[in-house]
Image 1: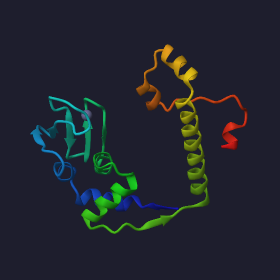
Image 2: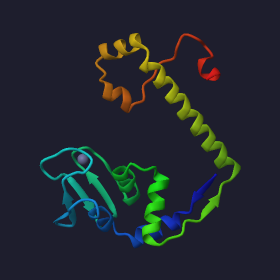
Image 3: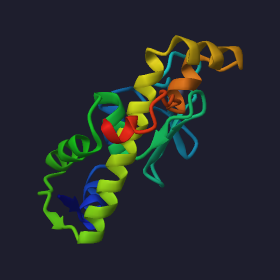
Image 4: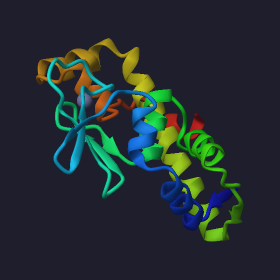
Length: 164
Ligand code: ZN
């Protein structure tokens, strides 16, 4: 597995001001040191989506979404981080060169993947577990909260996850 060097990412950011990137999707209006728009990530009547050209970041005070140009393209195009970065690199004329990872990096990535897999598995268990769902609902948790925090359930067997 390979990773991008951070200097390439900063070159991309230098060449692509956030205002250019964002305004190729939505219309921005000046608001002091910021630019403002109606948020493209949630439905709103008044503009609470702000872009900071100085910091190269955006934030919506309505839905809380925020980040940089990569996060923005990722969210608005429905891409992965890597795909969004590749698209921006292309636009900036930066060739992405990947660094080699150390064995420790591999280990960390693997452990992260295992954790994700476990989380997904427990969450998937919950989907078909009416009783557990009922319990969570009775404790006042909404579907949204359950999804947001990736809540899940362990089934009766003690080695279910390992078997999976
Ligand atoms: Zn928003």
